[in-house]
Length: 328
Image (cartoon, rainbow, N blue to C red; front, side, top):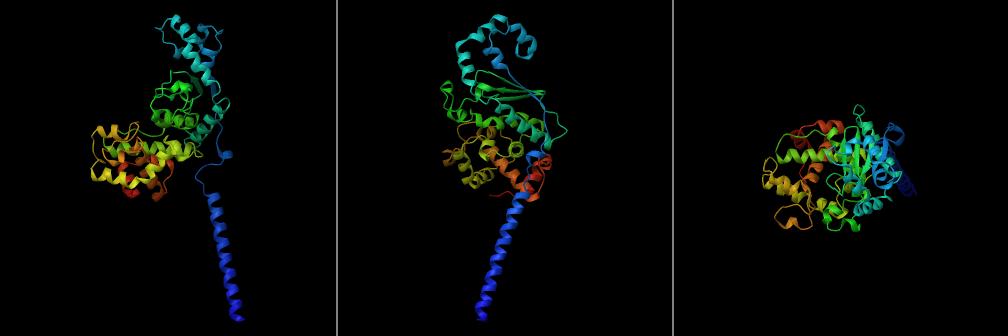
């Protein structure tokens, strides 16, 4: 009888320990988030101007009135006849009407969320006072532009990967031309305010700068899935994760880290349908894998050191590599 009672008491305390441990995990998980709560975010003030609606939608608005209000969109050497013809051009009108269902009031809410997080982490840094949407003939190289007090958004580059107006655009580019990538483009546009450029030509330095930029996404848009930050598909992110060790050892074995060969930027940092290993790794690899690797190095450094966002952004490349002990 005594042995049976002893077993029951031990079982009771074992279950109690499990419950207490699970409770601790729950409480710790709820209270240790690195991200601010919504009520902790500062308010931001900015105006949203839908310029494309003024220019292409309300044709009764005199052109001279638009030119006086928005002179930065009208080069002085372009005659009015060019602008008038553009306002009624059939392709421009098709683009304009395709953008009408996009975002709505959600544009301001989503932009505000990014700017609030930016203000929270960098309170001394000024933010854009106006967000202006416009058509840019689907210029996907400039989907969002930080112009000091203005944040310009090329609204015709968010129609969706399968939109017929994007016919002829390479798939690896079309995959990014969706409304889901708005926050990523805004953060990339603003990133130069917070992430210092490198004058070094070394491949590792450039990888780490991209890694810092991508880390910024974690903080300024914390609810977005990780693959949206680098604008990968989920399959591309999964490939990068599965081949992380292979890619890293390929870079190390070929002495790429401290190389100043400009061709490495083309192969692993610039946009493309795939990264260029010139090996079996090319198949199914996403472009810009060097950016992703830079992000992984920076994340490893932050995890090992406990550095804040600001401390990571200020850290030197050699310190980041050494203290990260990165070796997947």
